[in-house]
Image 1 (tube, rainbow, N blue to C red):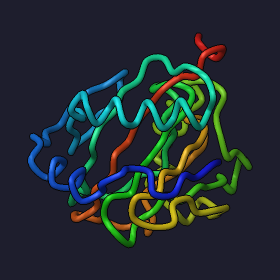
Image 2: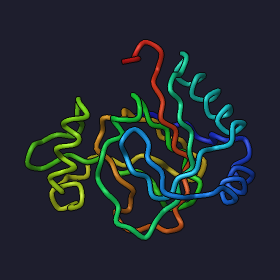
Image 3: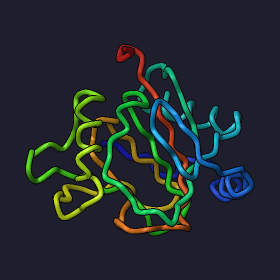
Image 4: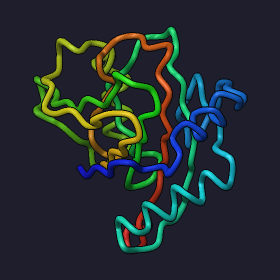
Length: 178
């Protein structure tokens, strides 16, 4: 996992733009997102430029979004269906990402979508008592956490966070294309 501080040049402008977007349930690569908005193209360009500089290589299949908190429960999950990497820029304070290890299996990541689907179907992702918290990502507003989409993770703290606002980007690095 990596972090980039002061990710956006003007986080307040990004927050204002994000607050004006239409958040509605959407489906993407078989996953359901309850409060999801596609980022405007010029925000996506900023994100891609920063991530390209960070990785020192080209990005493919980039999906740049904003996500708002919801009243529904959080879920321990992976983003494996969305590419090879996830980048989350924290816009609201007091939120970050928790990374987990499943107590029964010892798994902290999956290698295939099928493995992820089996864990989802088991319902274990809805019960944090079946998991060990192994680390936290994100250290404040305008910090970007970058991690492998195969890692099990969730919102932290593990609770409903209706005021949470993040910019989430899924992408694949050149050379990691499927």
